Image 1 (cartoon, rainbow, N blue to C red):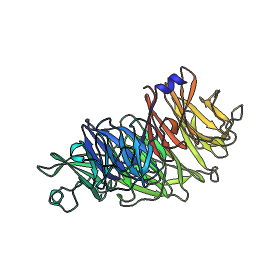
Image 2: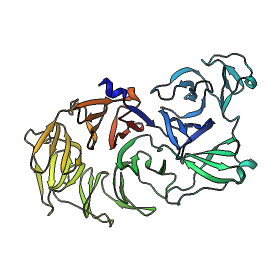
Image 3: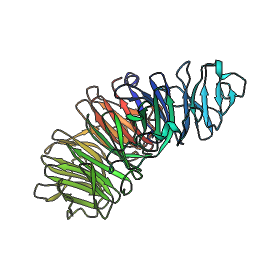
Length: 468
């Protein structure tokens, strides 16, 4: 177990789309956002090198020019964080609109402090200070900002985004926004040269789907798509309409469906089309020419190309947790057992010999022609004819599983007390928690992509590198 954990790296993805301060030092940006602090490596494309999620918004973050540590202010306290460590250190009570870090001292709103947060004396002119906050911010309406070319993606995707933080940096002006990350303008032309949004703006992440080219995440405040090196956000403020929390997502080729509390959103081109449902959508699956939609009270059926859904008789009082379309039919996991829907839409109850799935079937996934299912009795697999069973390192009765995934090398399960990863060749489970860097122990879903995984937690997303 120790060897596995030493090769594991967890990168939390806090809310850095709503930016409160930005500071460049060397080839890195240090970003303070509503959900934490991020260190962005200015590569092509830019990428999030280190991040930490916080309970409260971070107003300012500044690097130490001597060692790369990050000082930041959040919830009335001054913190010190070593990028790569899962926890920051609380230093002293502080509230400031500007923060400078030098070789010897800290500087907050004109005052001089030791690096432990105690008042002292010093001269910033001789200390090589790196500043963030109002001292270096251009102001809205200044001549340097009046000529900025507004940057809009298609209106249905983004809407109007507030530019709130300005950071002049030699030839560039970095602009932090309220929901779209950071824009960089060339001062010679005032034309946007790039945008950087490296994390989705959601406090809670509930469901994940995608592949190596695109990843979708939905949560309590909207949806985000990761593609081309940055996140594109779809939030209530930046959309023509929105309809509550997102609990499910399904992606197949160019088809994208989002399950919301008010119904099903289907992405068509650059727009979304809403099909309202009487109950919140909890699960979505695409199987051939059929679109399966599970709700808190029943199973709906439609086609991926149309917006019409009809209820399937026989499951109308059950909560549908997961839907797995396979070559042997469509497996439906509910709060009252597991069911199989045939090609002719005949419904039958599916019983396994050990009755692992006879109570509530929590979640599952398909690997080839085999279904892997976690129920309140344990972990079972079914290939259409034969049942098999796998040991879990936790009791699914006392520790509910909310999501699961797998590929040829790993199997992962998201639970209320961490995410579990099984390296299949070694046959050993390892648990990942906040101790290793997850934003929260309560995990809703997991998406395996090669040797890495995205984990949706109660406090946002994290990316887990399994082979480092």
